[in-house]
Image (cartoon, rainbow, N blue to C red; front, side, top):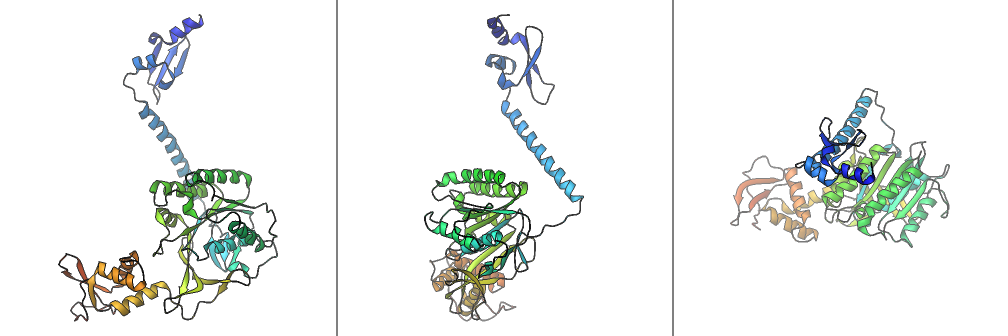
Length: 432
C-alpha cells in the first residue's frame, strides 16, 4: 500500500471502532494487514474523533486519571502508616538542645518570631554556630546554651532575604564561622549560604525550591538544617492564602519526604505578639517548636536591653521555662543573663493597667479600646485595646448588665476584684 493510500485509510472511519472495555475510552484502528492499533481520543484524526465520539468529554476522563493517581499515592501513604503502627515506635532524640531542654527535632519546623530589633537573627546565628562547632572549641558566650545533640552528620543552609550582601550578611557569616571555631575565610563542607535580596519577589519561591532540590542531592547522606530568614519574604503577599499555603506545603512535604529540618524566622505584627500575616498563622500551626523574643520592661513599662526568650509551643515536650539574653559589646554577641529583679512580663503589665485604671468603670468595648490605646500611646482604637478587652473578659473582670447606649453599643462594668454578684454599686460611669 502506498503512503497516500495508507493515509487515506487512517482517516477513514470505516476502519475505526470505539473500545469501552477498559477503564478509559480507546479508539481502535485496523491497518491494511489486519492488525489493531489502540489510540487515546486525543491521538486520533479530528474527523475520526468527531464521527465516533461526538459527545465525548476528555476532561472527565483526565480528572479520573489524576484522581486515580492521587488515590494510589494516598493508599501508599496509608500502607506506610500501617506498617509503622505495627512496630514499636522509638521517638527520635532532639538534634539541638539548650541545657537539658530539647529545642529542635529532626524533620520538623522551628519558628522564631519577634518584632524588629529583638536579636532574632543573632539567636539563629548562635544556633548555626552550635551545629557547625569545631570539636573542642567553645566560644565565650557558649552559644547561649545551645548545643548539637547528634553524632549524625548535619549541614546548614542559610537563606537570607533582607540584609545587605555587601556588609550585614557577610558579617553574619563571619560571626557564624568565628563562633564555631573557624576563620572567616574557611570553606566548610557542610555550610552553604545564599541571599534572595536581589531576586524579584515573585521569583523567589520557585528559585528557593530549585536551590533546595539541588542541595538535597549535593548533601546526600547529611541531615539538612535550612534557615529561612525571613519566611515572609519568600512570597509576594504574606496575607494571601494560596501563596502562604504553597510555601507552607513545600516545607511540610519536604520534612515528611526528606531528611530536612527548617528554622524559620518571622516578624510579629505591630501592636501584637502574633506572627505576621496568614503565613505566620499557618507556620505556627505546622511548627513543632515556636520561640518568641521580646525586650523585658521594667515596672515603669520602659523597655530594658534584656530579651526574654519564651517557648510559645513545644509539641514534643512540656513547655520549657523562658531564659534571658542581652547583647554584650565586649564579645559582640548575645550572652545569657539573669531576669531583672524589677522586670514584668507584658501579661502582668496589661492586667495591672486594667486593674489600676478601669476598675469600677462602665463603658463600651470601643471606648475601652480607645482609652487603653491612648494610655499606651498607641493609635486610636488600636487592636491592642480590643485584645486587652478580650484579656479582661477571659480573666472575669467584665460584667454584662444588658444596658446599651443610645446608639445601641453594649455597656460593660469592669470589676478587677472579680465580684461574685452584679449588684455592687458602681464607682464611676462612662458612656464613651
